[in-house]
View (cartoon, rainbow, N blue to C red):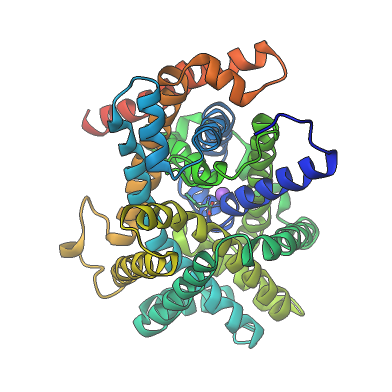
Length: 459
Ligand code: PHE
Ligand code: NA
């Protein structure tokens, strides 16, 4: 392709599209549902600081690596890694990173879809006014003893969400998704900010919530919590499973990778922190425990909606936006495997997506059954049911491991000149900073956290 200087409008239009798709992937249930509840489970402050450090020192450099690998190869992740490895004289086994990504995507989507189903259910229930006037205890019962025990309802909503995901992916991401994300992401931001104003002015516990998030007490921090914080940094930025690599393949050549990636990471972090600042003051105002687990969003926030005048509509809109944020992430979870199956088995896109969605759907059923029918110890492994196990294995092991290998690949396997050219950073200082991150700091950080977690577990 000719290296003509593109017109300014062209460059911005295309770069913006990539930012939208990537932040659509990044911003999702990880920010609004998972971040507040795992922060609560891990005691707040210090956990948040480790998470922020991981975003900056591990997440951003690795996200840049994924984008540059995808854009340089312009292929699906499995092919991309294998091909670039061969070009650099390394083993084709590097394609295995893509394989692990495909598997991780399927595992994540199985529980992600179940939670997105809860969000769809709450959209309907709130609009219908079913929570109006309920106390926080009653809202807690409606979730834990109502929805989570209702296999039929869980199955229906999980199915609805998987069908929606399949339709969007089958249509191709350009038609349906880009336009809806363009409208919905700003709407989500506005609504979150409005709720931030509510929690800052109406709950009377904003200070307590704020301190909970930002008071760093390291005495409470175990290596296991550090592992969760690091794992969540990967999960929330959609890293380590090649989703961003797959999107990077469509990124225009002239767009700056560094600036784009930092924009996505900052947006994602802002949404998570604002969600925390909305939820914790409400939790404290209602005398609830921050460590309530996965139900936190569906109980604490919903009890505020139940009491708030007009909360039925604000809440309905809120969960609608959460559902859409989930959808813009779920398509990126299935995209790498869809691209691969299409190529590998010479299948049409619709067939590939149908097949993969069915597989995910079955795993999803196992996840939702592990919340009720299969909640007994005989259905558990390492004390976790399928839902928790998939969450733990992907976020805390597969994504950090995949990310570490991607960093090593970009830092050690790919030729320096190729990477330098692809990143096109403004100065050599920045390039060297990035390169020392992916060569040493990021892989070492993941390695140390893995080793220390194991060490603490068995000592
Ligand atoms: N980043 C998404 C979220 O925070 C989840 C996700 C993980 C999406 C991995 C794609 C790949 O909700
Ligand atoms: Na996220």
